Length: 113
Image 1 (tube, helix red, strand yellow):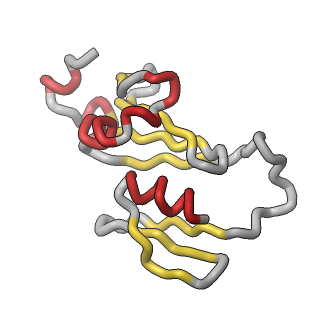
Image 2 (image 1 turned 90 degrees about the horizontal axis):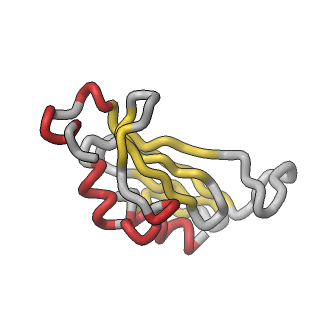
């Protein structure tokens, strides 16, 4: 719980409610993430099937803050599915993608490799 709270804090989510083994993290833009110390019984350790996608206009700004956590040691890039994004893994193995639609970016940002 502590590791996840710290991890998501780096992504801009702050503690909004603490109920012992259950926490709610939020940001000022309407995102809410619920964390629980009691995982569902169907999750196999090391094989978390869950993922989440955080839409954020300043993809590069957040990537600069969490660069050492980016999967593959890479940086944000334009993907064939039309998103400019990067990916992380949270402490429980949840895939976290952070991106913004390429079509909504400025021409200068779209030219970035």
